Picture 1 (cartoon, rainbow, N blue to C red):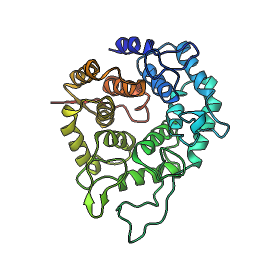
Picture 2 (picture 1 turned 90 degrees about the vertical axis):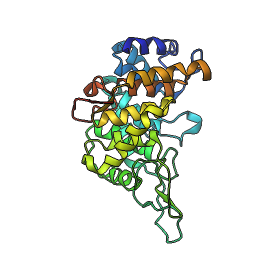
Picture 3 (picture 1 turned 180 degrees about the horizontal axis):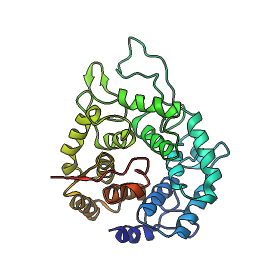
Picture 4 (picture 1 turned 180 degrees about the vertical axis):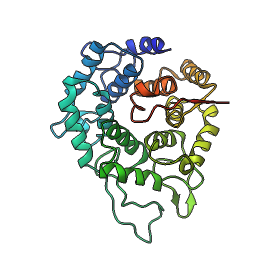
Length: 301
C-alpha cells in the first residue's frame, strides 16, 4: 500500500523539491507540507525528503511562520505541519526551532464573554486560528498541539490551555465542529474532520470516558464518509485511540474510486487520506501519531 501512495504522489513532485497541488500543477506550501508527511509515513528516501524540506525552508518568514503563500502571510496555519515535516532533519533544526517559537508566541483573538453572546463556548481559552487576528478554531489548534507535543512541548502553558480549549468546544452529545458548541441555545452538529482532528490532538491527554461520545459518533460515521478530508481525519482520530475499522482499506479504496466521477483530488486532501489509511499500520512511525504511546489498534466491525 505504501508503494502505491508514493507512485500516486510521484507525478506531483517538482524538481526543486516542492510538491504541486495536482499533476502538472504548481507549487503550493500546503501541498508540500502534507506531501512530506505522507512521504515520511510511506518510507520515502531521505534524499527526496530533504529536498522537499529545503524547499519549505525557503518559504519561512523571519519570525518563523510558514504561510500558505508569501502573499498571504497572515494565513500561517501550515507552520504546525512544517514543524512535523522537519522532524528528524538536522538541516532543518534551526527552521524548526523558529517555527516552534512562533507558534508558542501567537494566538487568536479572544474577547471576554458577554451575556449577549450567541455562542456558548468560552472565548477566552486560547488555541490557534487558521488566519492571524481571528478566533481560535479546532483543526488548527489540534495541528499545533500535535506538533508541539511531538517536539516535547506537551507541558507548555500554551499547549495545556489549548487542550482545555478543545475540551470546552466538545459538543454535549459528542464530536466537534469547526469550534462552537451551542448558538442561541441550540447545539450545533458535529463534523467528522473536526472530530478526528480533536481526537488526534487529545489522545493521551484525557481518559477515554471524557471523549467516549465523540468516539462513538466517529465510529458511527466512518462507513458513510466518502470524501478524503473527512475520511482521512476520521481514520486518524480513531487510530489515535487504538481503533481501526475492519473495513478501513475498503473505505479508502471507495473514496479513491470517486475520483473517476469528481476528478483527481488535490494533493493536501489526497495526502490526508493516505495518512489516515496508514495510521493503523505503524502508529509509532506515523508523523501525526508519534506524540502518542504505541497502542495496538483494535479492529472494529
